[in-house]
Image 1: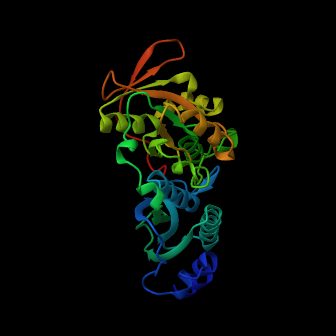
Image 2 (image 1 turned 120 degrees about the vertical axis):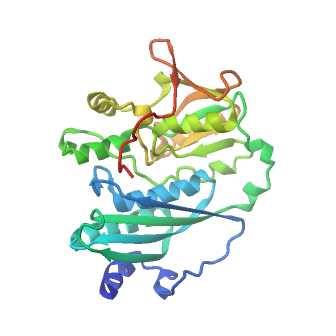
Length: 323
């Protein structure tokens, strides 16, 4: 175990904090409130088009911090490894985590490794926790400015359903027949500076399990307001839509791992949309709807043929082990 930690984890994740090898990471103080999140990743299969469990763990934790308007600082990484898991595959996953963390500008501050007997876990599980800070400039504003209200606009930062369908394709040995991949990505660089717009952003959440529909239903339930979205404005790749139709899934309910749902004020909406579109991760961003005062607590969608469909919370089982 000592050799594994030294030659794989320390070597890949090397930084001043981790290299001290203390039982606890001692982090530098920064101004502002701290944000803290944790998540566990059990995706099956471990490797899929566009990513793997390691990249997914880093991106998922960073995006949870970003949704809280925090600037991600560092992560922890806990590995539960099944006896006999190939070191070559573990090395690929650790390298992927290190690469994504470096790309996002965060570091692995501490971690843990456990090896369990054959059959006690399915190959590899990863737990990551993340710490970020909310800058003082964002704390000084009026809290009333952050409340979602009628007239606000709803933005999604790009194509939906890519991740869930890419994982399903890999799970069913169909990856060679698709021309899309997981949207797995860290969004802190995309949204960097956007939260500094005074009174511009009311709400942010990453539409992971349960997809876009579940996120919007949660928002409607939390605010007691109605939401009206337009099907023709929701970005879905034709290949993903076809794959969903073939397997019987609704793209609205399929998980995403590199998208954000944003509610913005009407006056700042066009500016924010243009800023998102100027970044590679946001070039397919779209204004998909608006907040209303009627049909309180409900999400409705204007369909492409002009009808209206009620969007409910997902009933039945979600796609298993897509994150």
